[in-house]
Amino acid sequence: MHGEYKVPGGKLVVVDVEAEDGVLRHVRVAGDFFLEPDEALDAVNRALEGAPADTDAAGLAARIDAALPEGTVMYGLTSEGVGIAVRRALAHATDWTDYDWQLIHEGPEAPALHMALDEVLTAEVAAGRRPPTLRVWEWAAPAVIIGSFQSLRNEVDPEGAARHGVEVVRRVSGGGAMFAAAWLTQRGRRLSYSVGMVITDAIHQHVLKVPPSAWTPAVEADGEIRDGAWVAELTSNVLDGWPKGMRLIARKERPHPGAQLRLTDADGMRLTCFATNTTGRPLPNLSCVTGCGPARRTASGPPGPPACATSPCTTLPRTRSGWRSCRSPSTCWPGCPCSP
Image 1 (tube, rainbow, N blue to C red):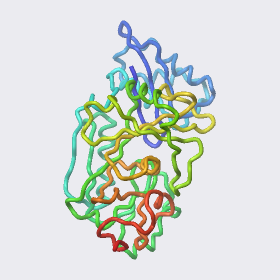
Image 2 (cartoon, rainbow, N blue to C red):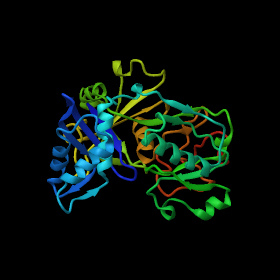
Image 3 (cartoon, helix red, strand yellow):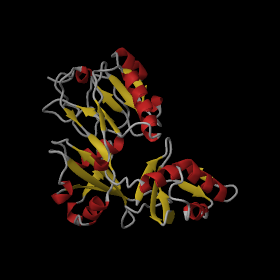
Image 4 (cartoon, one colour):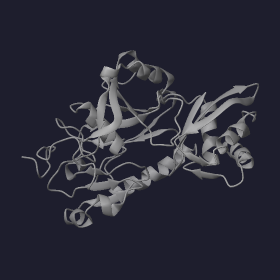
């Protein structure tokens, strides 16, 4: 059984475990977090081994805390996060289709209210008080949305934003800046999306079968080739039962030195996947949009590609990173002040 949990403000925790005769067996904790000293991770696994399978997340965290060597330092990891990942594994949380998703699609809201709702809903889902939720953004005003760890000074020209009436807000999730232009505040625009996917066993096996010739070099936000990263689109029966028009994109990349590989990684490469219905863009640029920002909900209008952090608009305030990766500065969406 496999479970994953993204620690708020931290890293991803991955747990593989079996339940035998009512207790946890073959526990293996992994992820992209850091632990010191090195033997601390073994202590975590030993603390969980043999624990009653019905122990709640808090009880599992207490077992871990009691077993950690003195002076243990956790980076991007908490004992509670490991406990939650274990509980998710025992619930057989393996695929997005296993969940009863709730869709929230209300009318346009102010940018600040969108950010507040995202924070509240995320906390409620993480605490188990509401089911997995997909919420669609509709904008009542133009905005630049920066990631939780981004520097406002490095990403945005505040004077330019104020001059053009563009509100600047910060979201609780990581990633790069996104730009919602005034044109996007009008109702009836086509919605497109790019959303991260859990790598199930079926997806993992399919990724392993992708021939070397099918992998394309990934690109940076500025359009330059990203060293040590490739992308490929997955097809065939791995998409059976998915909504019409959905595409599955895989990305493999050499992890930074010292990073722990997950069970879904292969050949020393970190594997990630995302689903999208976006068309009309080169595959590396699709990966860039998702990698540079969360891109969970991106609004756009036909026939152009979705507007996002890579908006090329030359007349509205720009972000200083990730804004020209996908289209030339002479192209923009219908209704933008810089379009013909």
